Each structure stands twice: as C-alpha cells, then as structure tokens.
Image (cartoon, rainbow, N blue to C red; front, side, top):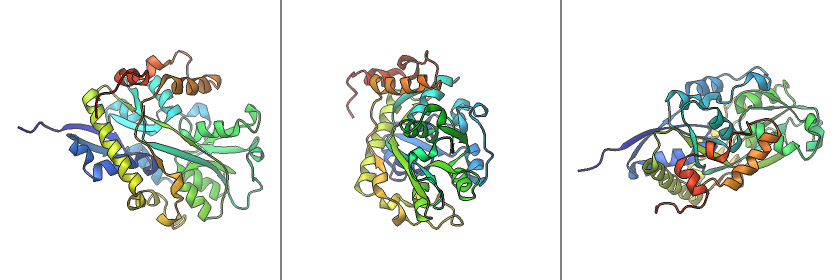
Amino acid sequence: MTAPLKKTRIELNNAVFSLPDIVAKAEGYFLDEGVDVELVLPEKRKAMIAAADAPIKQHSAIQSFLWHEGIERGEFSVYHACEWGQMRRTQDTCAGVKVITKRAAVSTQAIIVRGDSPYNVPQDLADVEVAVNYHAGSHYITLGMLAGFMKPGQVKTVHIGVPNQRFKAVMDGRIQAAAVMEPWISAAEKLGFKVICEAFYNGLEVADPSVDTELFDALRRAHIRAVDRINQDIRPWLHHLTAEVPADIVKLETSDLHLPRLRYNHPEFYSPAEFQRTYDFMVERGLINPESTFDKLVGGRAADLGRGVAPLAS
C-alpha cells in the first residue's frame, strides 16, 4: 500500500531566490520524495508588486516580517530569504520558526543609479539616500558594501518596498540610488543605468515546527536534484526571471541576463562560525538582540548538523 503524500506549503519569493522550488515542483522532484508541495505567493506581496509606486519610509516604520508574515499565520511552513533577515525574523517569531539550512540560491544585489547620475564609485554615495527593503537582503548588503568606503553615519538608507518599486523610484528620479537583485540589475544595464557596486550573499531557509526530520530530508533531496538540473542548463528556466520585469519598463530578454550572476549550490547546513560572523555584524549595528544566539535561532537537527554531527544518508 502506497504511503500517503506528506503535504507542505513553501512561500514563492522572487524567482531568482525560488528557482530551486520552481524547478523541483515542475520536474516532480518533490513528488518523487513523497511530498505534495504547494508554492504560495502571499497576497501582501502580490499587492506590493502590483503597486508600481511606494512611499519612502524610515527603518522604525517597518516590521521585520514584511510579506513573510504568512508563516506566523500558518499560510505556509517554509520560506527562503537573506541570511541577516532570517536571523532577525527568527528572533521575532511567535510561531516557533527556526533556521533549518542555508538556501540553495546564492544571490547578488547591486546598487544602481541612472545613466545621467553624477555618481560613479561607492564613495560618491556618502550621505546619499539608497533605497532598500528594510530587514531584507537589499538593506543588509547595502550596509556591508558601503561600510568600507565611508563613515557609518554617512551610509543613508530609506525603505521603498519591493524591487520593481525601488527601480521605478530611481527611474523617475524620486531617489538617486537603489539596491536591486536580478533580473533588475540586467534591466538597469539594458537601460543604461550604472552599477556602483555589487556583492553576493547567502540566504537561509526557515521552517515552522510542522517540518520534521523526515520532511526536512525529503525537501533537501528534492532541492539538490533541482540545483543539479539548474546548473546543467539554466536557460529553460530564465523566463521566470524576465517575466518579473514589466514590458513598459524595458523588454528584457533571457539573453540579457548575465548568467554568472545566477549561482545555485546544494543547500548546506548552517555552521556556528557562519552564524557568529553575521551575528557580530548585526549586533554591532543594533539589528538583532545580543541574546539571540545560535542555540535560540537555529533549530533541532539543523543545529546538530551545523556542529558537525553526521547527516542522515540521502
């Protein structure tokens, strides 16, 4: 008798982050592992994407969960996002959410300005407002990228929602600079914008208590197969990225994407040393409570594996 499929919901994020989920779902890798996965696009994020313009806000006005708050309400059980943001949201959770692994997508963000901007190098952005999404990768990577070029007080950030909104704000001259990921970096380059600086960073996968060891292992094996499929030939999947850029901004072709920017690894376990490096960065800037230690944020078997305990056979 065939065992019933386990069911879970995974949040669908920007395609560049969620491509392993998209591929695993389309290719049947989740089903092969006995898991029925629903990819959930949160209503809050749909509304943000649909709104081309967004108000400029300051850090104190933004809560850490953003559109990921659905995991707190049981709308989905797993999601991927930047390392720093996942640590902060895991600190703030009321639903027992824990870090379970590093995500498969290694992402990059770039600070862009218009082609007619007087800014050309990172030092030019001292005291210049850069649009980011607070508590997300664009926020933390901007702090990291600019920190070596100016005094901490000269790094100025403001919040403008999702990447299409930040991009439009630069395009319209409402803001001088913004941090964006792919496919928006390629869209910027196609329009003659300038990339001031760019950096790659890791993300983390978090889950609520419904994701037990068996489900964790099944999802991980499916993601490993999806990464291998992507790295074999990513081109059939690039339309998921280009579809995020409206044609009235720029007609972005899959050939416009710079493929070395798109990096996917097998999901790896999150080590205490990696945690400590990021924890120190965040504590120094007042972005996380000093009490939010590895043992509190990284959960169960993932914590054991991070310390070097041998994983179960795949």
